[in-house]
Structure formats: C-alpha cells, structure tokens
Image (cartoon, rainbow over all chains, first blue to last red):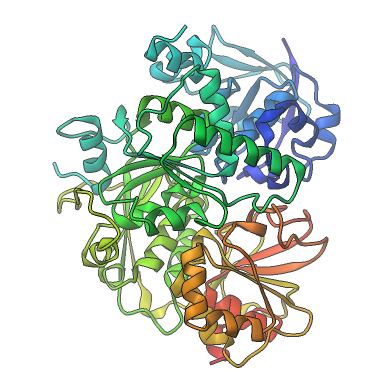
Length: 165
Length: 419
C-alpha cells in the first residue's frame, strides 16, 4: 500500500520523537503516546499522519535515550515502516522488539522528499518512490533478527525459548 | 591476532575462546539494572508469562526518574513497580530514601565488578565501563528478555581507541575530556562501537571522572565505553564487594577501527552548546550567554568529587541574582557525605536549592524545567531540544567547575576566571 513520506533530518533523537515529560507510566496505556509523537519538532505530524505513511530520517535516527516509548509512539500513529540512512543501535533493537519495521537505506534517505508517495516491496527487497519512479534497495535484515520478526517479536521468542504457551 | 577488553569480556560471556567484531553472539548476562520507568519491562515480562527472573540476586532496581512522584501517572507507576519488585522477589532494590540514581548507586554498593556483562533499560548503562565491565543500554522489552533468560543476543562491536596523554591542566576534568572527544568524532562517531579510553592521562584519572567519561559514550552513539580495571578501579572496589571477578586488558596486537591520540595539556574547560553534545566550544570563548538556571548533579556528574569541585568554586560566593542554582547529589550516601564535609552548607549559602538524589530536570521530568527562551548550564549529558523543558529553551553541558563558576558570574565563563 502506498503512503506519504514524512521527511526528517539527521540525528533525530528520542526526545524529539517523544519528550521525557510523557514517559511516566507510558506503557500502562501506550495509545496515549500517539498524540505526542514528534509534538515539539513537528506538531502537525500526529494530527495529519495516515496509517499507510512512512517516517523517513537521515543519519543516526533515534539517537539518545533507550526509551522504547519512541518506536511505540511512532507505531501508535499507525506508521509501520521507518526508513533512514542509519539508525542508532538501541532504537533499532527496540524497533525489532515492538514490531516497527526499520529499513536502512542511504539511497532512499538521500533521494526521498517530504510528501513523496512511497511503497515498500518486501518480496523484491526494494522501496519504490511513486512520485519520482525511483527504486532504492535497503540493507537486508540479519537472519537472526528475521527469526525474531517471523515469530512476531521478542515476547513470543522468549516464550518459545522457555517453552511457555 | 589479539583481542580488545570488550571482545575478551564478550568471549568469556559467550563461553568462547574468542569472538570477532560483527558476529552475533548470545552472551551470559551478569546483571540487569532498572529504574522506575523500567516498570515497563516488568509488564513485558508478564506478557511473556514468565513468573520468575533468571536470578533474583542479579537484577538491581532503584527509583530515580519520576520520584518523589510529581504526577498521578508517576505515582501509579511507582505503585506498580513496588508490587512487581515484591512479586519477582528482587533482592537488590533501592526504594526512595534508600538509594539514588542508578548509575551511581549500583557501583557504590559494590554490585558492579570488572569483567561483568551488565545491561539495563537506560541508555547511560554504559557508565559501568569505568570499572572494566561491558555494559550497554537497551529498551524495556530487551530488558524483560534479559531478566527472563539471563542472556542477550548482541553484535560484537568493533573498538575505537582513545589515547590521552599529558597532565590535565587545572580545572580540566573527565567531563571536558569526553565532551572534547564527542566534539571531535560527532554524535554518531562511535555508532555501534566500543569506545576504549586509555593512556597515561586515563591511568591518572580519578574513578569519578572515569564514570563521567564512560557515561557519555552513548552520546557518540557507542554500544559501550570501557577503561581497563587498574589500581584505581581496584581501590574503589575494596570494601565494596567480596565477590570474585575477572579483569581483562587489551592485547598489544588487538585490532581497532581507529585510534585517536589527544594531548590533554592544551585542553581547556569546554561546553557543549545547544542542541548537540558534539557542539563543543571552550567555555572562555562563549560570550554573553546569560543564564536562568544552573544544574549540578546527575548520573554524569553528581558524585562526591563533582560536589567538591562545585563547592571549591562556590565557597564564600553566591549564585548571581536571577540565577536558579539546583544541586542533585547522586545518592543518599553522597548526599550524607556532602553534609558531613560541609559542602551542602556552602551550596545553601551560595543560594542553591538541594534536591533529593534523582534525575530531576535532566530529562525534562520535573524539579526545574525551563520556560520558553530560558537558558541553563548543566553537568548532565544531553542538550537536545525539549530535553530540559520548553522546545525553545537551551541547555549547555559542562563540568561542575564550569557550571558553578557560571552560576556565580550569571553567564557562561571559564572557571579559572573565578579562582
């Protein structure tokens, strides 16, 4: 399904994605994060973003704190895929664990403009820019990580490891 | 081929002769740490239907971010956390009034030892590298998995060597060293990598300054920061722990991605300007930055030597009119020590407010948020937009010397201009 690109710059930190003041007891009701996602950096984002849209960042996306509330906040807006030149490591792990697809693609990050219409073809392993007719490849997901994703995240993975139904 | 300290610790934790940078391994975890926001991890543990942690003696919890509870959400979180601590029978639990900020209290209590693998749901978990441990921050679900399994999957990081030589000039501290380093390599200069700090300057560096340096490794994107456990580290551990531990050092022929050499004799007290910890300038060259607030404390710089440094400047002086001076000792024990040494009296006479040992305004939680347009200098670790309050407020990062001197002046200055 095609969706619009929300373009952000380099070094987007987790305080920009969800400021610290919203963290107390956040995962008691994670839905509440939705309206505050990018609240200070791009206040229009949470109001206007559609479930099929994409977040597109530059280098080192998600740097800073380890707060899992950051990828969860993006996920709660309905967005399912984040594309960036590169990701900060804790943010990348958190994406895997909460089921937000993080695609590393320097070519896509450099070429995509705000508002471009995008589509991800997982089978072909490419990102298509329907506004410019370009396609970009993304870094393949490591097999071990793919295993966790295929199980549905880290929670099912741990249950399987411990033989819990 | 030789190995680095980080590779040796991870090989040991994976039950292997050696490991190579880039490979994914499963490592034994020696400790999992958390704080009040890590309540989220217990909720994930419940989703996993796991009814006990892998080892109740190897999970450490404190409360530091939203305590004493500033909101009803925070109060509810704390109530849930207390129930989880009881249910999972967590042995090392530091409730309000019994502990302090995670990255200060766990080492202080002898719970962190060289050679350990420590993970926790706080990005500054990398602090423990100061004692020659491998430590790294994770999110809540990863921490839940580590609490359930006692192990962690991770990619072995390659290492960058930072070799410091020469004697530190007066009032140039570990904070200035790490800020200078981040300024040189950038906020993603060590992304996914280990930052290994070494050289004669580091060998002479007090343990508190080493905690400060490793604490901020994540601000360069690093997986961990690490310093070989030497005489200084062993002296710190003496009397704190009876548990056995292994010390590792990097081989002469270990392979590094890069090596940086810094002559520290020419360094000056520096600040990180808004809105990046890599936006570094000498404090003495920042002109006309008038301050509304000064924060001294945090997991980065709230230890006893940090408070002594601030008191050295503030003794007999006062914070400038219109400047709010806030001091956050990092643990109850540090607070008590500061009382006994008369440091708290110095701070109060200088016009400071003294807070309980919590994170407070560092992450924009409470106890000193900035209004629109306000400016602070802070000994904390991050100065991103919105970090300490309003999106149009500004935070400069510095050492306790520079922060205290700037409080007296009312604007940012080089502390050597005060004494």
